[in-house]
Length: 284
Image (cartoon, rainbow, N blue to C red; front, side, top):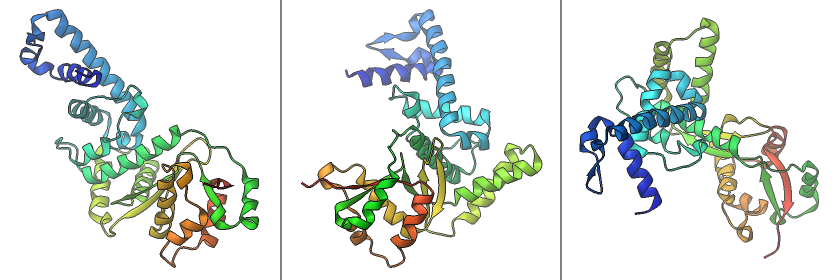
């Protein structure tokens, strides 16, 4: 049995205490030892508390919108379903948004839009954990002295783009503004706003978002489909080997729409600190 299988079996036992009399491992009934069951209960509470704390940080927006008690029940259900296969609590939750989308907890309404908000939360979390990238703005001079097929663009740490089904940026901002006006905004009031947004939001096939980290805190903004397609090229480029890195010239060749202008995009990208440097490609 692999280490991961053993870990999952242990976690399954921990989260099946309601049926403790039925839990067996290697044909030995775990409930035979009362101390063992008591120990599992302690560990269960500790694991749930740690997971709840970690996911409340990672999915801070979701946590604030649905309330602490509902979020805790959601986390427990999530752990029971997916278990914990990462040693770093900061890596927990990669499939939390998908789990929310298909969740059947009675008091968790608006699961579709909450799943989109969770997706954005996790993207921001990943961006903030990304390794720093050195800046060299002087390298931008290469744009005027080198051929575009010899150049590549180096983006800010952890930059990413993603398509979502709802305009979650405006939804989040509206709820924050309501909170400021009312000083205290109840979970029920937030639920009503989410319901309204969920009904009104499906006017487009998709909404596109850019997430990046100009300094230490992740930022996000809604972008056009044309900019999304352009940046998606560079996002996929991050996983390519060095000898297959995308050049600026090749990226422009792959951009099949006349509605995207690098002349308009580049100054904006530099101003918002999305681009860290320009570098020359190493010949094969």
